[in-house]
Amino acid sequence: MPHTIEERKAYHKKWYQANKDKIAVKHKKYRETEGYKISQSKYRQSELGKIRDWKGKGMISDNWHQVYETYIMTTCCNYCNKEFKNSIDKHLDHDHDTGEIRGVLCRSCNRRDVFQF
Image (cartoon, rainbow, N blue to C red; front, side, top):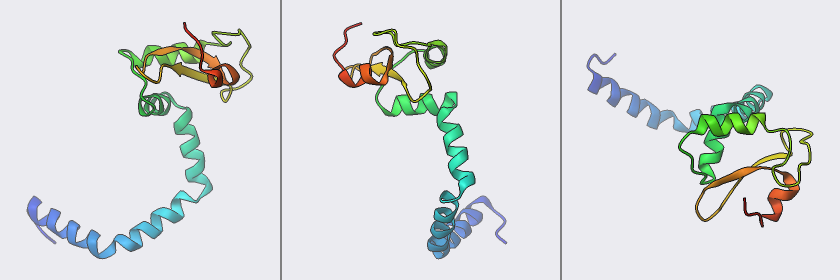
């Protein structure tokens, strides 16, 4: 077994190159398991998962935890006042040009994308 950090890195890099096909198959099988799907679903509904998703969509905020708190506490659409039945109905609306967050909308209002808050 290698003793220095450089030797370990070289050893692991060589081992990975020799085994990356097996690793890919193992990871693919794991991603197909029910446990993985459940853990991913829980992550996407968590604060960190939601914020990461919003950032990935180009939304901009100085205080993501406040945005998340507002999102969680909102019970009806900021435009039509329709009460949210579940989390699938609730959408964080944003301007696609600037990334500015405009409010929490129901699915139908969010799809219209014609709102000026």
